[in-house]
Length: 261
Image: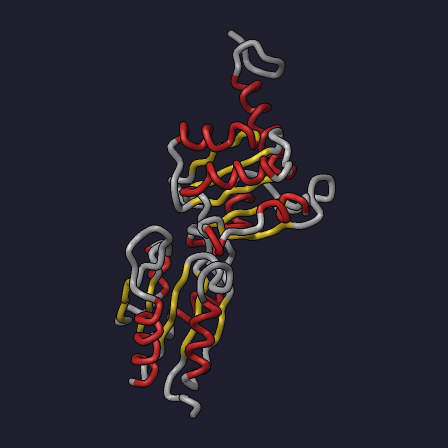
C-alpha cells in the first residue's frame, strides 16, 4: 500500500566542507520535520535545517558503535507514518558505501517513496583536495571504488583489482592497510606505485601522507593518520608526489628558485 502522508529524502551531505553540499540538498533539509544524521556529517550542515526540526543522531561509522540499520529504517518509517517529512542525512553520497540502497529498498517495500539527493563522495573529493585526479589519460583510464574493511568472504579480490591498472580508491581501509598493501604486493603490483592517504578531507583538520606502495603502510603509521580517511593507489598519485617534491625544493634555502639570504 502506498504511503503518501509525508516526504522522505536520502541526502548526501558531501565530504565535509559545508560549501560542497548541493543546493538541492539544502532545500530538502529546509523542508524536513525530522533529520536523521550520520556520524561523519559535518555538524555545520545542520544550519540548513529548519530551526524547529527534530535532529536525531544515528551515527553509522565503521569501527564504532552505532544505531543498528534496522533501527534506523524503523525510525524512518515511524516518522513518515506519523505524517512527518524526514531527511536521512549521510556523509558523502548516500549510494556510495552509505547503505542508502538498503534504506531505499526498505522504504519502497513499506510503500514509502523516497527522493535520493546525491552528494560529492569522499572518493573523489579527498584526492582532489591534494591535487590528485582519480582519472588522467596519462596515468589511468579508469577508477575503482572499493571498501577495504572486509575480511574473509567479504575480502575484495586484490589481485584482480591490481590487474586492472586503474586508480584504486579505498574507503574504510585504514585499519587493514598493512593487509591491503601486502595483498597488492603479493598480486604483483610494483612497490614503486604511488599512494596517498587523506584524513578528514576538505575539513580544516585535513591531513595526508604520500609514499610508494612498499613504504606506504609504515609512512601512514608514522604520520599517525586514522579514520575517516581515503586511500588512493595508482599512477595519478604521482602528480601529488611531484608537487610535494617541488614545494620541498622551493622551501630549501639555496634551491633553484628559492629565496636565499
